[in-house]
Length: 409
Image (cartoon, rainbow, N blue to C red; front, side):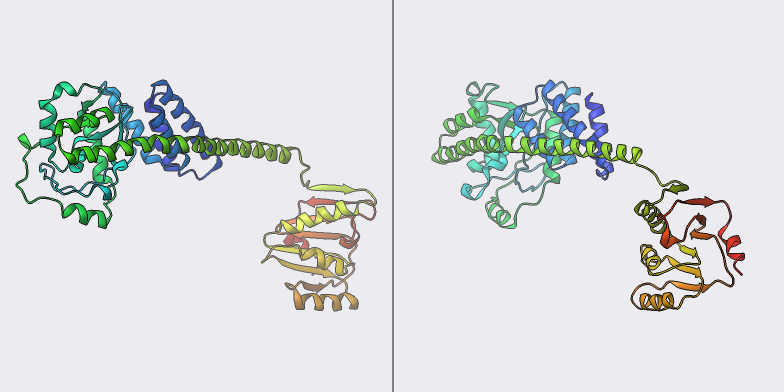
């Protein structure tokens, strides 16, 4: 799939919110296609691991954001850029920069300032300036004076596209913790802000680990040396964390994918079973002795009733009451039969505990038995209590229930 197709499919899946099993299957297929694409364009292993972590947690926004970044950078013919975390910065103004002094670096999360740009772990000039206690302009000025010490693998400037993405992510990042805010705000000097020429902000410079190591020699201060030691330790800690977790993430992701494939197979098996399973026919003949088959067939008819059940049968007993109790809640049940004193006693006791079954005495003798389920009429070849004990049939009839009930009056 192309990058445009991956983005479009991801946006569709994000809208669907993965409500169905089919959506989940599409999601796993999409993530696999994304990982294949990232490998083809030689996306760094660390960024692929990051994408896999987002995929495991179904975080569409950062995944689609990474794909959009790749597409935009391909159009500009530049290397893609992704960000592992947002910097904790305090924005004063778009075109102003203040010097930060007496910064307590131990209270700043340096690892959050290390970004993954163009496949390299780097820190940006404004974050480094904050740590060193100087302005960004002062830091870059010292670098330019010693530019021969900073080749491309030590330092590079972000493109306009990378810079715009950086600004948008900083603008939408979460607010800094209140305690951290108070520490940094108290450190903002009251000196005159440095105005950017033309009122526009130039893309920042990114320093690799080697470039940061060189900064301590350029700045020539005890603070710079101490800061660099802490930064180097932060750089060292990040690969260890990634290596410890990437295999676990991959295993969990593979387990989830295997589970999805298993669920699909189970659904196919259940569908196949439903196709070949015997269905309830409108007419059925039961051989002598097939009591359970006949009883199960009629029980299913009772369970499927939505509104009413009406039994017309001259010979009923307590077994019929048990059968009609299989009906769903809210479904009425009526028995038209001859009067038997014992059955009336059973019916009274039954109705004291369970949903009532109405009894209507037949005005005259009737030979055939019928069962009405909602608006359908079934002919019973034997009394309901004896169905299956001898050769009998159950057949769905075309006559309307109301017409049949008219004959009982």
